[in-house]
Length: 137
Image (cartoon, rainbow, N blue to C red):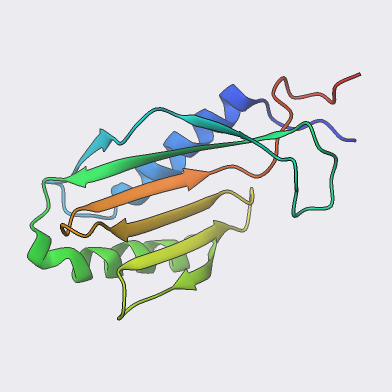
């Protein structure tokens, strides 16, 4: 039952992963929130650790990019991730524009996907963390 970063620190790291990834895209890109930061229970943790922890996640729209360049922009993100310490977990291309990677340094997941309308979004999620950073007594 080790300490973790807290949920606020996880939210900051999510923003960092998203912002640094988006920097690999053309500088016309803008990040628009796609809903609030979400906190979900780790009732069935995949890491074998204790329950009562949470995962933190957020998605943002990638606006300012022409939809006809979606494949090239997903390629840019994929190349950035592979060159910067991320391991590819899912790559559904060419059937779907959907790629998920995991940071080898902090186990955060980052993904890009296309909506049915052709809009790209990027999201990140944390591993299971204690809400306050320390196990509940």
